[in-house]
Amino acid sequence: MYTQAMDTMGKDGGPKAVRSAEDHQLEQRFDARIEAGEFVEPKDWMPDHYRKTLVRQISQHAHSEIVGMLPEGNWITRAPTLKRKAILLAKVQDEGGHGLYLYSAAETLGTSRDQMLEALHAGKAKYSSIFNYPTLTWADVGVIGWLVDGAAIMNQVPICRCSYGPYARAMIRICREESFHQRQGFESLLTMMEKGTDAQRAMVQDAVDRWWWPSIMMFGPPDDQSPNSALSMKWGIKRVSNDELRQRFIDATAEQAKVLGVTLPDPELKWNEERQHYDFGKIDWDEFWRVIAGHGPCNQERLAARVKAWDDGEWVREAALAYARKQELQQQAA
Ligand code: BYC
Image (cartoon, rainbow, N blue to C red; front, side, top):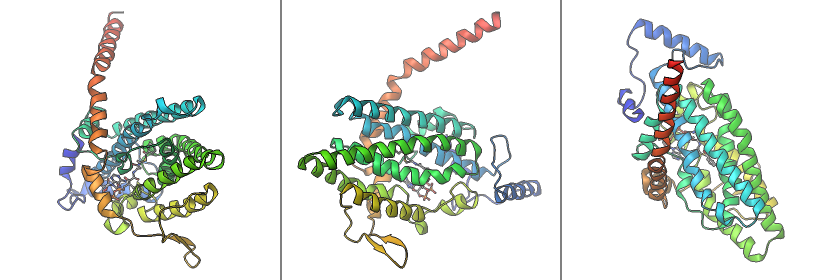
């Protein structure tokens, strides 16, 4: 299991000391390739810690996609029109697809999908904090598109240039689809704000109030409290830091909020002419750490839903394997 594999790292969570001159040479060559901006491919030599960092990040990302299907999936039967239902169905289906590309990318690093899912179901693997919040009204679905997919794109576009080829290539397709997701969310909210009733506009504002702070937590802890950033940046897994991406997202979203006619729930949000960025208020990092430790409003519900889906799907996996075995035997006999 990959979480156990993490035990082979050094005690401080960093890589172990290089063991031999040959390892040292391989590592130097690897660093030079990264420096030159070359892609690393599955069969290439790579440091253990690079491999583990990728498995950790890509599998967390894959889990986020499939857990992320749950809050919105909750609204498919209650979408207000057939058009909105079709859009939401397609979006949730896309997220399932993103999870599959990402599990495949992680498998190229030598970890099986079963191992990754086992870690998720045992509560050992993380998924994005954002999906532990409830979707209380239809406006939440629009706000997820606008803010959550918006934050996801901001974070994920730089991963298209990640040093690991299979992850970078998966991200190109994912980002194209995510940008549709973001736009449909914004358009759904704009429709409610421009053509809706006062009650619908209040519903949108309420959803924005609840999702704003969790959305800006999606980028991860501040850079000076991010234990993985230094190596991930050195190795070109991460190209832009947590804080810089968060600032870019806030700058873009504050302008979009004006077009929508909603107020972002931060009295300290203000354009700073000197910095050429928006200043913003204090983020409640205690809430973030609580949620990723498993104590958010919906952690138990989300995990229980994934475990149930896995258990319910057992007969499908068994049937698929039995069919594959039968095909193989028939081919051997022919
Ligand atoms: N939630 O050292 P750090 C989506 C963990 S969107 C939970 O900065 P790193 C979607 C972090 O894992 C979301 N945990 O870590 C959108 C680490 O713990 P471990 C998915 C978080 O990896 C719409 C610890 O905190 N996107 O898919 O350098 C619909 C310290 O953090 C979070 C991705 O996963 C969080 N928000 O940076 C459907 C993008 N933030 O692992 C689906 C790829 C931090 O050491 N991932 N942690 O135990 C990344 O870009 C990076 O992994 C992160 C964190 C920026 C998230």
